[in-house]
Image 1 (tube, rainbow, N blue to C red):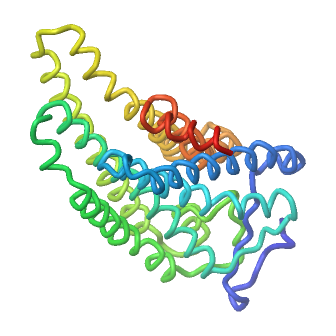
Image 2: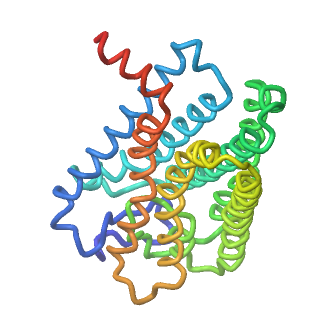
Length: 312
């Protein structure tokens, strides 16, 4: 470990250690990592290709699915390639600029991913609670504008993070016990006061997760209230079935994220390799499972995917 220590006069670079305590198993760990990553890329690329080719799928719901696929691919690509370089080639070094760039992209894409899930909840709310006006309320143009708002929000929220990190003094120990440059993992390498970084991270977590989950929860309260007013039991089932896909996607997306954050902030007794593995699952599971969920649960999309596979 001391071989990686740097003096303050050296260039400000860092060492990413991968998964501490499991260094001997890095090559074996890389097998599920690379498999999940490739499956996620193939699944999301297939969704993008099929929706792009089929005019019948150029609808708001499928535009949202494409936005989710893009954020899924961005999330995994911002983390997994560097992690595989650590596992396969022991390339642990990363410059300060590279570290800050990775911090920005992985957090910005995560915020954008959450914004897409909120927009999907709004889409389901309009489809069930105001179906007659769905086509006029949610047009492709309006969905694109909502996506742009989500992107601007992500950039504005996350841009201060690397800027705040760049102002911190980094001394001898620049060994980060992680597979990627997480905001707080980098801040803890500073020999200065990083209270502002910690506070800003908590504020952003509250604004994104707290606010977004509240909006999604509110949408589903209104959806359930509207469904209960429908006299037909068959109509009940049909209305709720339109929401199951979105609920499954939320569970695969938010569950690893919440577990990782709770373990990071309150799980002092949890072994580091457990926490880091949980953190990586957030970037591996949603990109792999979301295309499968939409492929299975969305008949129109699954039919078109099946048609293209049969042609090949």
